[in-house]
Image 1 (tube, rainbow, N blue to C red):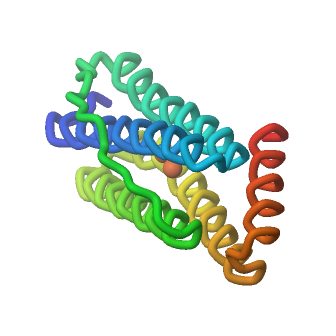
Image 2 (cartoon, rainbow, N blue to C red):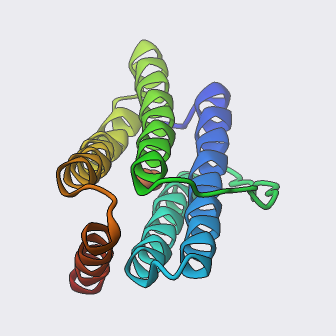
Length: 166
Ligand SMILES: [Fe+2]
Ligand SMILES: [Fe+2]
């Protein structure tokens, strides 16, 4: 079944969101490095690469279905980091926006009886669940440990180790 123009343009718009997420995490990596949160810097660098993979997955799906995939315009995101808790809370919000876009895409695919695209998008449903749980988990950890000198040092180290093992 050919992909409807409406779905094609919605998928292309979602490519833009994944690109924004990739850029956002890259900017966070830099901002963390500046603060000497080297574990977090490493973690966000890996997150940025993951988001690019999400973008490419849609890109490939479109091309395989003879749809022109568009390369999104990108601006460098301006990020300032306050507390570590605020940082992860902002990431969770950003992930929730991506999840909302996946939901809209699935609603559209189902309404047009495009079950192939619906099936393709289910991977993103699982992925977004994981990402939201990841950031919620980090918010919980930082809340438990606190942001005193030793707490933040240990947390940064453990986040960095997590990036290395994923
Ligand atoms: Fe993503
Ligand atoms: Fe994500």
